[in-house]
Image 1 (tube, rainbow, N blue to C red):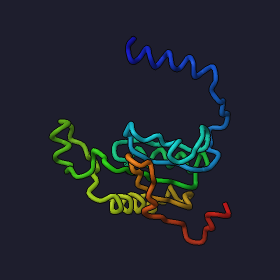
Image 2: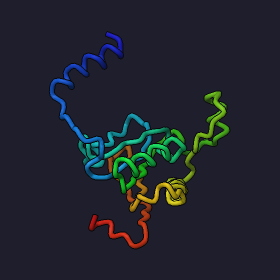
Image 3: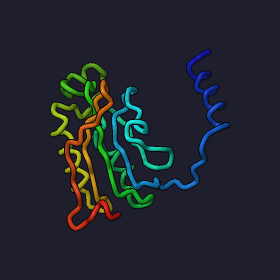
Length: 168
């Protein structure tokens, strides 16, 4: 059986028992930006369920133009007011340069390598807070997920001045 056929077979079983969430707005008003790494089960790691959060994944869990596009829609159209940026240990973007990644892939792209998780998280949070069109965001947190232990380090947080995040 090919991998595609295995996926389709699994879908038949899932479709028969799945939870049907009718509202496209995430009920917990959260968006999670994280890495595409197959070792991260975002819903399990954060105790989330279907319909509770938007999950945006890319290499490194970095804030890219596409993440900004998605968060603009998430916040203005679908009610998201909290963003978690979750990077992880043993990431393929850690400890390499953009030039090395370009050479390995043959792609002339910006890969957003990570030298220091805390610095990268602060940089991405600053980028989000500088965008006027993301003024709906009230809280942004930067986490690092440990792929070996499953534990999350709460590295950096930002809260919009004058907002009581717990009261919302």
